[in-house]
Structures are given as structure tokens and as C-alpha cells.
Length: 171
Image (cartoon, rainbow, N blue to C red; front, top):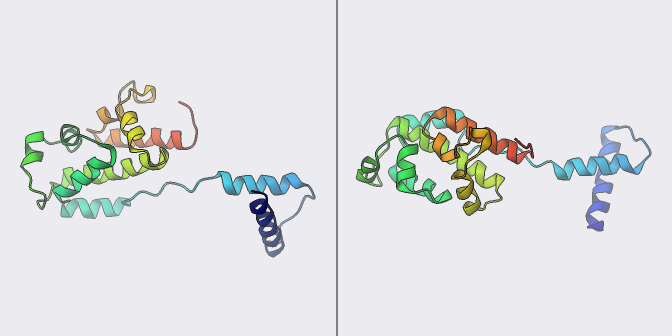
């Protein structure tokens, strides 16, 4: 740990000299900069950018991808069918190589982004994410996140709550 701080101090001194940054002459200036550099996590990057979601949804996503996404958080076929806005019988009828409809594909891609964000927030702990998805959340009008994923607005609300958790904002 001491070696890391020492190397960071050397790096900061070099950066400060290269960038002509002012130095206040106190050690707190350096440590404040160090804390900012190490305490700020990189922002979450969605798996699929918005225009990619549109393009892939228009092409249709393979049914087999729905199973892969469901496995990320242990979602059941009934839960997946509800999220994809289709009956569980229709979901079961689709062969793995068949494509979902445009709307179902878009929902699956949004779900992929949401679950990846959730895994990022919960340190890749799929079980914790699955429990959270099924828990009643006050910020979501005392509904579970899964209950809201039948609408695209619900996806946004759930993602907002994940962002607040990620940034330590208590609701």
C-alpha cells in the first residue's frame, strides 16, 4: 500500500509539473487528488448503445439469446415472457434459432443492459441481483423491479434506482 501511494505521489508530481498545475504546499492537496483518482469508479457503460438497440431490435434477436440473458440473473421463463410482453406458451414455442419480434427484441436488449448494470452495481453477484429484482423497493412505489419491467418506462425507473445505489444515494 505504501509503495502504491509513493508511486502515485511520483506520478502526481510528474503530472503537476507537466501540466503546470499549482501546488498549495500541503500534503492534503496530494491526498485529496489521490482519493479522487482512486475513489471514483468509472461510469457504467451500457452493453448496447441506443442506436445498436434500435438496429438489433429491427433485425430481431434470436430466441437462444433470451435464455442467455435470463441466466444472468436466474429469471424464470414466466418472468421472461412477462418482460418480453408475450405469453409463456409463445416463448416456449419459439425454436432457439428463431427471431423474436421487434418489440420483444428491444425489451430483451434493454433487459440485457439493465442486468449488466445490476451485475456491475452488485459486484457480479447474480444471486444478490436476483434477490434485489424480486424485492419490494420503496423508490419504485413499493413494487419489485421485476413488476415494472413490463413497460419501457419501468426499465428506465429501475435503471435510475440502480444508478442511485451505484452512487451511494439513499432513497
